Structure formats: C-alpha cells, structure tokens
Length: 123
Image (cartoon, rainbow, N blue to C red; front, side, top):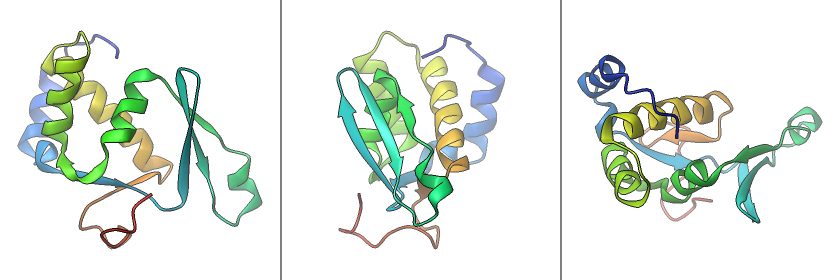
C-alpha cells in the first residue's frame, strides 16, 4: 500500500460512515490467483467487457478475499494493519482508494445496494 498518511481524507471517510460500510463482490466478476497476483475478470455478456482484465497486487488481493459482505471496512482495515507493515491511517486511505476503483468498474457493491447479490449467492 502507498504511504501517504492523509489524515484529513481518512477523517472525512469516517464522518460519512465509510468505516461501517460492508462490500460484496459483484456477481459479474470472477477472480483467479496466478502466482503472486490476482486477476479480476468481468463475465458480462458485452464483448467489450471481456477485454478488461484487472490485476491486483498482494494487498489488493487480500482485500478482495475479505470482501464477504459481512466484514466492515473498519474490520478489513484492522486486518490489513495486523497482516502488513502499514499504519491504520495509511491502510484506511489506501482501502478507500481501492474500493472506489472497484466501485468504478462495478466489481463491488455496498451491502444493501439494490445490485447486491442475495446472501449465499456471492462470488
């Protein structure tokens, strides 16, 4: 994870309930681990989507594994702090960036969002 230490950004996320959010993997994506990387593959019907393959580094892959619709962002942040050499502030800022990127490509949705797959139907 990148070491930025942007505390103002983290505080803004905390004020808006960011840490209490829960995310689930979108059913339109599958993941495959190859060596030290994880690939995200869209499985939508649109041919253009099939040309997009996303590569996650070790930390991002760990986050992807933890997105179970049950853990909060705060719980995931705390696990990252315990597993990697990173501060809570840096982990939270980087986690916010990653989740934003995953939302932009529609690889994750917030639990409770009407696009969330039903329980037990997660990828």
